[in-house]
Length: 444
Image (cartoon, rainbow, N blue to C red; front, top):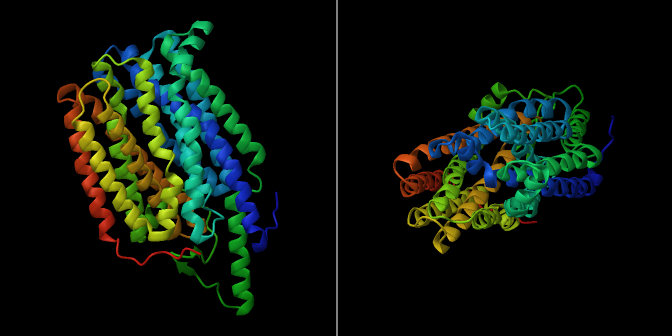
């Protein structure tokens, strides 16, 4: 479909894009969080080993990372709609495979299903970038964070579906813990329909057309001269020539060439490592103290509330004071959260509840600041590739955290795991301070 966007329509198009993405994020958030809440418990049940409890979530996080590769290529070639639909489609299939695995009692099949299930998180992650494609530079953090915030509704509701999920499982003749994945199927299916029907025109393709218009205008001002490259992190960038290569090789080249892009990627990756490593083993830590499933679901809900609910405030802070300072703040909050978690006793405790909430807030700071910094650092045509490689690295770090977390808790305990996470939090602080001397971004 050929579009004819004009600069005057940009704000209107952006509002429409954000509304659509918000709706899809609410629905996809239900699918994502419902599975996260019981992933470790179902893995332990199917494997019969506590040491393997984190494997399911690790497979999901690994799937999130690797599914980003084809999603980024599809996005670069044909726009955000195709990329988001691909991620949601794989997640839908994954939820169905998990249901089959739970009925068959197959742990290997469960791992495959959770890997595909990670496509839902891939789609949710990529949606934040879609919100930034047409955003004005002075509102980029806010628009991006609003889409991140939208996940709050579905994500907080998801873990609390553990109870109703058991009733659904009984009604359908499924194993008790698998019932929440029925809600995942519904959530991902509805989110796919919203993206397919309503994300029109495509924000990335529209942004490219605006870039084409800018290039034509530059050439018209100086006939016969090549288009000037606008390279200004505060205002965005227009590449000299279109390039729709969304490969990881190109993404790595772009990130390595731009220090701000590298910083943004590391902030997101390390923040994700801390969050996943502590979060994935919290249900097991609570189960050791005989906490009920509903209580575990409540704690995870509060954690997810911290991840998403305050993100608009985080986005405004990024626009006002700059991404580096917010990244530093995120490192401080993650460090405090990990230290508090290391001091919590097994089972339910108010201290653990506070720690998990702060863990979510710190993650939000690193995600929103890192995403905004990355988007500002690269040209429109460079975004799918660079954003793709950043999310792959972030996902792989999360997978590493989930894989190691189970063995650390099994051999050394939850306190040691959380203490190690605090050390990584300090690294984020150092990374943010290393370039945290830029003047504040304009607010209007």
